[in-house]
Amino acid sequence: MIEPNKLRAPEMDKEEYLPDDCMKNITVDNLIFAMEAGKLKLLLAKYKHGIAANKWGLIGHWVKLDEDLETAAYRVVTQSTGVKNFHLDQLAAFGKVNRYPLRRIVTVVYYSLVRMEEVNIVQGKNTLEVAWFDVKSLPELIFDHNEIVESCLNHLKYKVRHEPIGFSLLPEKFTLLQLQEIYEAILDVKLDKPNFRRKIQKMNLLINCKEKQKDVAHRAASLYRFDINVYEKLKDFGFNFEY
Amino acid sequence: MIEPNKLRAPEMDKEEYLPDDCMKNITVDNLIFAMEAGKLKLLLAKYKHGIAANKWGLIGHWVKLDEDLETAAYRVVTQSTGVKNFHLDQLAAFGKVNRYPLRRIVTVVYYSLVRMEEVNIVQGKNTLEVAWFDVKSLPELIFDHNEIVESCLNHLKYKVRHEPIGFSLLPEKFTLLQLQEIYEAILDVKLDKPNFRRKIQKMNLLINCKEKQKDVAHRAASLYRFDINVYEKLKDFGFNFEY
DNA sequence: TCAAAAGTGTTGAATTTACACCCATGG
DNA sequence: CCATGGGTGTAAATTCAACACTTTTGA
Image (tube, rainbow over the protein chains, first blue to last red):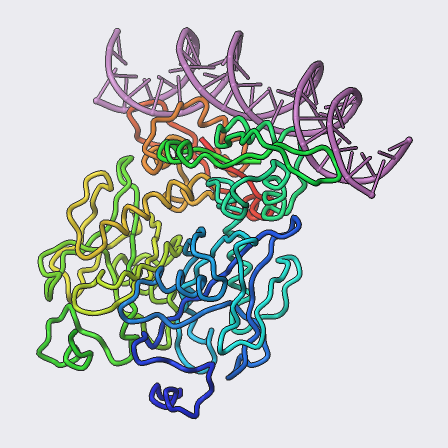
């Protein structure tokens, strides 16, 4: 086991840099999702230093002593994407003894759903590259991050059926097909278009903007927006997004 | 902020006793549930020492450096109830800066479902009393434990609809009414008996033991057991326990 | 014979599913 | 004029919800 003090020596690997105002055994890691061209994408970083050098992994950081876990997760997402408004939720804590090879670190994992058009990727000091990957073809990741991603994708399937989190991946105004693509991407199924639109409309969560798409090479679709007020009312009562 | 070393001095409050082989900023807390007389019960401890003295709280402990989080949770449940086989699942990590008044501690919360007839409560060294409470009338709890319980009860409602965790609260052989009572207690609703039994039977998760209840003051009910094999097959395929 | 719970039957309403089909637009 | 996606209609199959009813048992 390496001594914590050694890790804070200036000549150590950057990947291991642990500021004094941070907790020493806890990190947050983030799964940042967005939709692009009907595909669900995950943001990953290729690290520069340390045992993770040249390998892809989730975007994580230490947690400051005076910072809530959720605040830390929010900070990391905002720093790396520039996005300020997004859905943020905790997945779970991962804490196997040897999940991190050098010493005992527990990571609390959060996932975020961001709107691709709001993203401006910011390179971190410790990363060689930050890039989007289709969730269906992910590279091998550091530590237990593949396991974490798998667990999160399962959780998303679970979640998308019971809360309208899908809307967080769309621009304010969207078409029914865009919405359907999100469900298809997350649940990894093909849905029947007529049935999907009937079902989603019946939930009364959508407001017709009375606007149409522009410059599309086919009949222009109606644009809708999500009615958060109706959702807030339904939420307490309990409802279901089964497909 | 109190220095960690002070906390480890022998004259400190027992509640703060932090063994050297444990992580210093992380605990596990457990919600231990069981059914009794159709009610969902939660096991709580009244603490002896420290700032939690004479107050009720969840049953928690430090995590050893060489122990997985889940192993720590399992250890705590087994130590306090004597039960060795039970459903154990992580709820979430709770990590607000001031959730613990004296210093920064993140707790990873697990919940367990145990069979009441297997329980033999063991008093801890740091507890005055360990007792079951009806989840519908809980006392005021230490730190953020009331918030944690509320979050867990919501999670259970969510969970019981999608996985047959209810069976973990029952003895191996049980009646359909006992099963219904679990759903009613967790979901906090009254269910229609004929419809409930039809629905549950159609799922093919039950095996009729071809035995009857004995010594009951009414018509004896058939006993069933849970078919874990069918469940394992269904699980990958995805299914639903809606009521 | 009564209370309490077991267990079955029935029915109309609601929902789901799987399609067929027509519409609008740009290339 | 055709490919692409938008959007409506419909009918059969299934499921749901509510409630009436009969059965078995011990006290």
